[in-house]
Length: 348
Ligand code: PMV
Figure 1 (cartoon, rainbow, N blue to C red):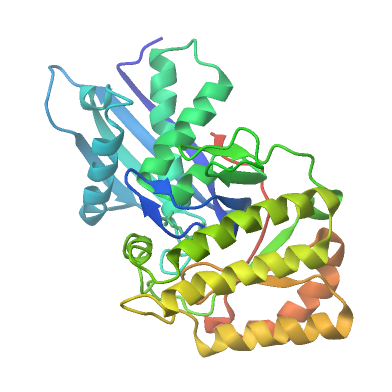
Figure 2 (cartoon, rainbow, N blue to C red):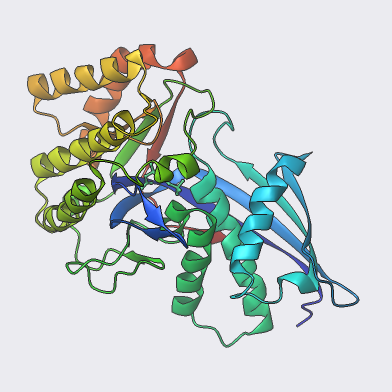
């Protein structure tokens, strides 16, 4: 094989946390365990072109293109990532790289692209390592890709595989680790097969709080220790629910997690309110609809105003009608994305 030059492309999904990661220690070690659904329609497509350098160099050399345009302002983040992972992939300085990346969702949609973007880059780098060392097993490949992705952006370690991924050491989750994401190890009830996530784009602006700033707010936060305990307790509870299929309990955990994440931001110093009036309107509409129809629709939130509407496959007609007729009016320019649980990253 010729590993002196080549090009690798990975398509890597975003993910949505059910139990949230918020708070970390160096080097990207989560304060609590989190679990997410891997998504499908929201993804990043990254091509990494590499060419062996003629002589040894002591700096990284790469160019970055995003949606076809040269993006020098993305370089510092990638340089930081390279610096962090270099000890695990020491061949980085042997190559000149060109990174070409695009997202399936609009850049300024308020959907975080760090999970899909960083996991895509980690997978491309792992593909080069595999070229250099073809002995590697798939298990090792995925584990190390998740390990590297974590060093780019914590939640990115949950975007390598599907459909449910756990990140963070937890006594109730066999094989779990602070260093990489693992597939949820137990049998999942059929109620969660093909679960839907329709993302309502309430505010397409840039996020007010970057997650880098956000995680730091948990240092010296008056409720930090309680929050980390709550999340870890919720991992135990949701693990039961995923096995027994109790959708009412699922809703109770997932919505509480979303509101607790925002409660942490409202009670930190400095404090933030990332929900918008339309975020709250949507939440109340969802609650009314659930009371009126006994549907199992529920919501979750990331660190922003957009609402992820979760519902089981067998309710898709009922809930889609409700979304289109009642909720879309609260979205910016009626924008929303229909997504669902996916199986993970794919090399193209
Ligand atoms: O991966 P980061 O550092 O961008 O943090 C993501 C944090 C949340 O999206 C708010 C929650 C989560 O678990 O994904």
